[in-house]
Image (cartoon, rainbow, N blue to C red):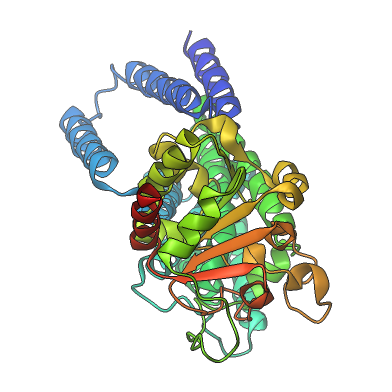
Length: 455
């Protein structure tokens, strides 16, 4: 019965993951997966209820504290901080798996079969790397440390040496069964997680978080083998596979390999702002933008990280409502790597009650852009940079972009002419068909709405 119920939990995990493939079904998918996890926990507790060494007070206290923290975070954390929260979740997941394996080392004094010792070593190594690496990613996204790549002595070779040492220590642990070897392995991989992620630019953190999510799943699956828990094996394998697929898709969306993201030290957290007077740009006032929008028939909104920082999703929706009331068609073009985590823009716009069927991906929005009257770019930069298409010498050449420069008019709402994560200028800003509204995204859109209502 326990095995069958674990299998049922695994089916709910799979159905939940399938639901997460679309914004329209994501809430239901999340609920199904949560029910599956609750079922797995109840079955696990029921299976150990007669064990005399179980300290139920600890389990109950942990459930209350953990549930309370989860409820608090669900209510208080803003959508703009969701990437940091996901990074922290990945870290805690990896750390939990490493602790499960470590507890087995303590309980058995390191005496395992060869098969079990391999999974113990993998769970500790992968779990600890995920733990330390995820909290470095959290610190970068939260601004606690610099978002720029931090160079290490020897560059990628430093991490390669650490990884080699970790493999050697892991072999020592498996072959000898010495508990000390497992603790040394945890120390080496803890350092490796820090040095691997700190050398990556802050704007590549979405890919890193996705990869760390995959690793947390692998660590959980290994922990499942250690304690022979089918639900943990199934859930961990699903997370590992889904996270890896997402990582590959995000890398492809930037026309880069995973190795390039991890080892190239590419990008910055945004270079110094340029004076708008350095190059000729078409400065626009809120009134100018309002007039352009009022006489359009079709408008495409392109959200970026600047929209998230300014929490301008509701301002975007209010402006869209006013345009739709005038009979203007408004749609939204979402780049796969816009924001700081996969689906970041979709979540923000969904929070503002933007209908799902108006959110267009890259393949559906680009064919529409040449026939669009006005494109409203809110806080996006590199994902709309035509250099990726036109300049073979550009570091982002070949990256799929939203080709907003093909529209009749492009309005860019941005604080300044500062470059994006790639640290390069954007020719879009200087085109004759581009209007630059230099403003905070929320304040600028609210001013445009006020001007539109006066027309």
